[in-house]
Amino acid sequence: MKLKNLVSILSLFALALVTFTACQSEQNDELLEEEGKVSPEILAKLEAAYFDTSRAFTTNFMGEEGVAVEDMFFTYAQIDELQPIDPLAKHYRTTNLVSGLPRVITISVDPALGTLGSNALDATITMYNNLGLRISFSRVAFGQRGRNKANIEVTEFYELESGGFITLGRAAGFPTRKGDPAKGFGINSRWFELSIAPNVNELAGTMAHEIGHCIGLRHTDYQTRQSCGQNVNEGSAGVGAIYIPGTPTGSDTNSIMQSCGPAITFNNNDRIALETLY
Image 1 (cartoon, one colour):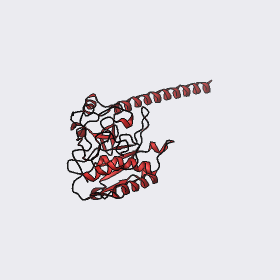
Image 2 (cartoon, helix red, strand yellow):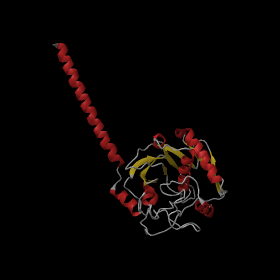
Image 3 (cartoon, rainbow, N blue to C red):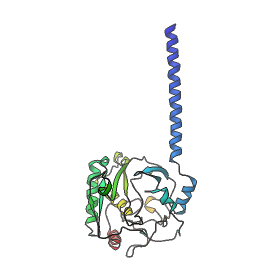
Image 4 (cartoon, helix red, strand yellow):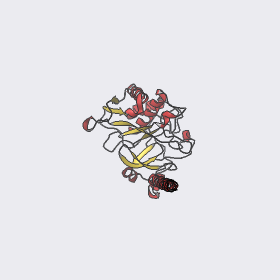
């Protein structure tokens, strides 16, 4: 009889514990959902700058709080600088570019991206340096601080697919007013787990695309984002959208700077754009 009572008490305790744990889990899920939501005020600023906010969410990226939107990340301070613009503008680079030319830009890659990430970065650096521009890239060790810290850091993040899309890379903005490149970009390691996992050339192409943003290149189909199956005009996004002479004024389907690919190497128009700027 006592054993039965003990079993009953233990069973009730276990049930209560499970119930409490489930409630805690549900509360945590709700909290996480709430933490990921973007305020209506921030959404309005992003939408006024012609960003597609359907999958925007708040996050900490490269040590800073802000919002991930499309393949970009903006801090709240950067979002405050965004301005509504003319949606019919037809341009392709940001107002701010890397200055102090000729210049060697140091770049590092997170060991979390493994051998694939390391080899892809080497291939990306070779792609850019073979162009003979007034900016070149040199690899340094990841995680350095102070004067030895890389100008551009390639970090790892993990993000599941959403609405049938997976974000492959995410740049931390565009060049600063001081003329420095954006601090870096992330590569989604979830991509590595999929059946369509990248090879070195595909990953190098994605890295080259994100470096393009870091040094001031916009999407070549920014008026429509047609490579993503959309019809959305990104506009100037408050950072400028200035036409680069000698390049197409419409979408360039073979450009590495298409919003959603699939190019993995520079085409002739990409070379003209980079040579014109740098």
